[in-house]
Image 1 (cartoon, rainbow, N blue to C red):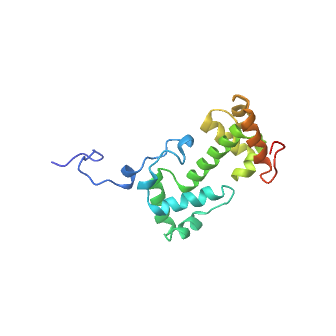
Image 2: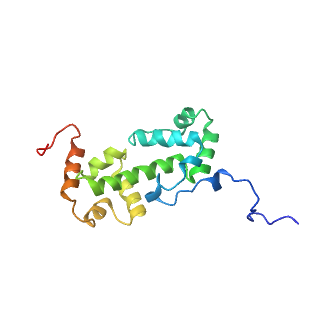
Image 3: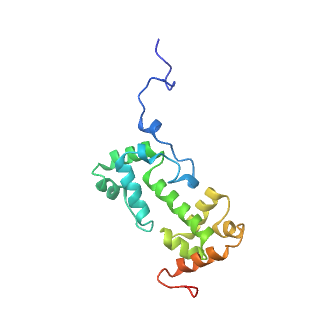
Length: 166
């Protein structure tokens, strides 16, 4: 007798979906999946995205970088990560923005520029959906930065500058 559609077959070969952990939210955008089991072409794509979050990478650019057709690339990427390449890039940007809010004194506008977001309204709406507060509210709810974090924040504003303590 044939199993019902969608029933779990314990003897089935692992697929891309069962080999990798799917993203479950912005906090785990690039930290909570098994990279070792992920298709190398998807790994390369993720590294391209991380290299410069400000860079606009079209699906065609990403597909070309992996030597796949656009449709095949998008299918493969979603099968491996659980989200589209565009959604993944948005998650990376939000995660980086959250990190900068927590560890720097950069303004919201400066953070937006660093992560490649141009529209403040969209940024605030997506950030609030992901983290439960607007970027300003998120930062206000955090304890003040420790002195060593403050130094890191100043260095982040001007990476080439030396601090007075050096």
